[in-house]
Image (cartoon, rainbow, N blue to C red; front, side):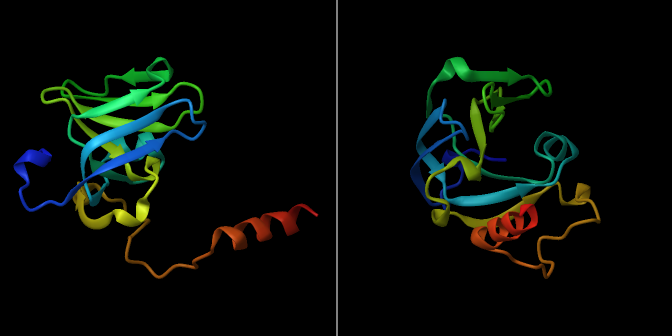
Length: 150
């Protein structure tokens, strides 16, 4: 994946976000607004499914760094997560310090455009992002689980 500076046609913006428990806050100076999905086996093992992520370049700051644990997943990359809540924080390319981060960490998900998929050849046959599905709102999900527990 090319860095933001190599992609002149990619729209970029600032981004702010956090892990699930709030122990780590993220500030990105220049991140792509184009979001992609990785279907590789490592990402699927890491996330439990495909990784929906955005290129955040290298100008990132973390508040709560002491809560970040890093796993060197290959010679060229490492993955970071919150050691309090387990939120996946980043896939970082070691050579150029480029951070690819889960899009769900960021506060303004409506700003992203889903425009690419990588490792499509490793995508398992059990899902397809263009499938017709039963779509439920958060309220419908909570209503279903609340009524099931009564």
